[in-house]
Amino acid sequence: MKLYRLKRQFNGYKKGTQFYLVSESEFIGVKEFVLRTKDLTNRISINESELLKNFTFLKEIF
Image (spheres, rainbow, N blue to C red):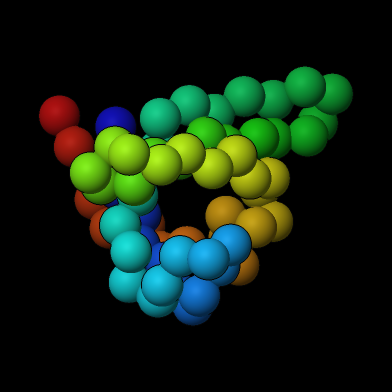
């Protein structure tokens, strides 16, 4: 599992909020990522460009 941090405010979440990458999928060249907040209460689904623009990879867990 990978841990990401928000670079800037996004979809109502504050800068610095940490997310776990729960799932990633690709369908006909379009990548989609599902992230959950570190406390696992909220979930967002984003595409690859949103991930690269708004999130910073912190570390691999496990």
